[in-house]
Image (cartoon, helix red, strand yellow):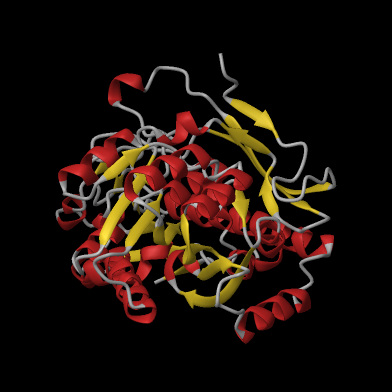
Length: 414
């Protein structure tokens, strides 16, 4: 029987054992492990959630890894339910097609393709597409939508199979997936097998500098094994004759980077933006323990202040609910030990989650329409990365004098 969890002993990029732990969020269930009503009295599995930094290549990473089979075979995050993400993926696909002159003979492969939202925009331009995703439920949805999707984890074997059956890819995309992968060597080898000589590996991920600048500690959870800055990625790609040729800063998920990677022998050369980002990281002292210790101090302060605020409001007889049954929200709830005694219920737009309960804290989840027929005093915004979209949706609630409590980047009431 495979282990469900393992302790990280060496850095997944450089192999160093010089790992400095700087923040623990305690033990908690898998944040996307929503439970049914009949499971409420059953024991849940709890796993350590803590981060360390490699003092050789300076990759920030979890101290413990939960088996991907537990986390990804039945996945509940679906980007097509968010207007923000649909617009983002449409813009991304259009920009790639226009900049790199893709046409109907080109193949785009999306690693961690989810329900096929990104690929649908490439397909809409008559470009050949193929998704690869380990989630059985989402792969089925994607295939039903006409986006051909392989239900598997991407790596050397899958890359060889695709190359044999479909040919080489002009573009391989990976949005919000690289951080989920433990064996980064395997994915880089797979990309080398699959890409055309002049092909591009285009990756998006939440940027670690934004995470610490905006105190986005609830983005740390079991699915996210790595928290990337640019320097460790340069170290990784260099091992496989790949290099970063360009970078674009994008606002999704609290601040992300879109990086463009090619073979060092291709015609593409690194832009000045790559050098600028590396210099900025150096100035931010990401090679100092003090930087990480200070971040940990701020995280603990946010927990203290939020718990104090909610306790005070409850003593005043105020009603509080949550908005967004997001993984990051479940991290916040478990870290702060907030259950249904404090948060009456949570509303969410995703049907998969409605009727279920949050892992660990057992707060019931309802459709967003519940908030239309109720006016609690406060709503704790658990999906702050979609704050603008949610606040636009809930104008009527705010007109009824309802207020939102937002924790990131700092605690405030709006």
